[in-house]
Length: 107
Image 1 (cartoon, rainbow, N blue to C red):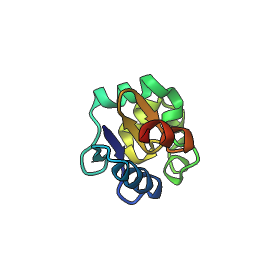
Image 2 (image 1 turned 90 degrees about the vertical axis):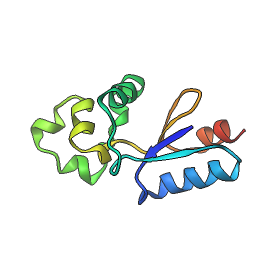
Image 3 (image 1 turned 60 degrees about the vertical axis):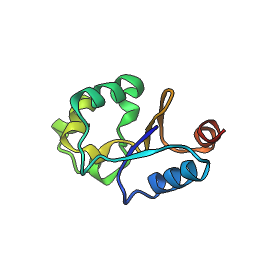
Image 4 (image 1 turned 180 degrees about the vertical axis):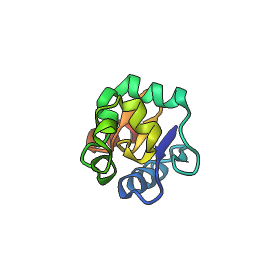
């Protein structure tokens, strides 16, 4: 299982801690230190579409109008931290961390 996120994200920290406490083998992928490949961005956007981008973030709000109007792939490539976090690759893709995702991944 791979958890894509940033180490300063509280939601990513909570998800990682919960998964490890449940005995899951989780690899944390810091998307700042190790940027996503074009194939990974395409897979994430292919799975989640525009939901993969956090339009409520200060990062997204600081984008130029041109970048805001761009495709999600271009937005994530330009600034990886605009990606909604965490993204988890397990038996399938998961976006975000909520009770349903936690229940499914820790069962």
